[in-house]
Length: 125
Figure 1 (tube, helix red, strand yellow):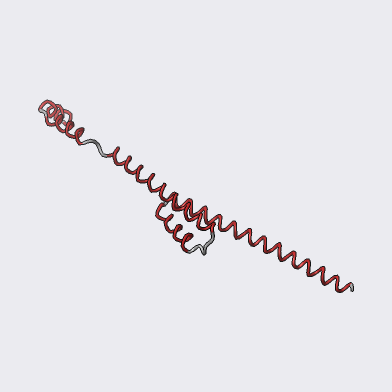
Figure 2 (tube, rainbow, N blue to C red):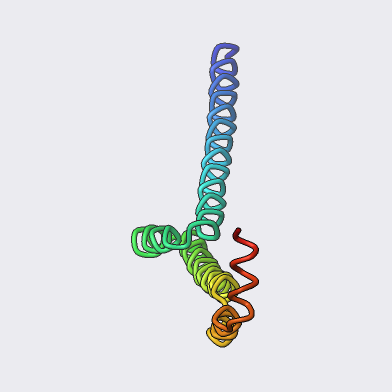
């Protein structure tokens, strides 16, 4: 009788230990997937075309998991926002670096006038 109760107690402890290990493994896997989602989000913002890779990876090859589909949509949205911001910033940068043509023409006209040519020659000598 004692042996049977020891065996049943041991089996109960084994089942509890197995459940605890299984819970730990599931939590570890959940953390790993959340880390990969954050990596996808950050890369979608920094390097927008990579966001398309994560969208395809999680949306089409996510095995129907709703968390992966949500991560795919978020990475696609972040990619689109990042692309729009990057294009806008590049446009602002190039508009500032390229001067107006009218301003260039006025500058050249001033250099061509005889008075300014003489002043320029004196400065260069």
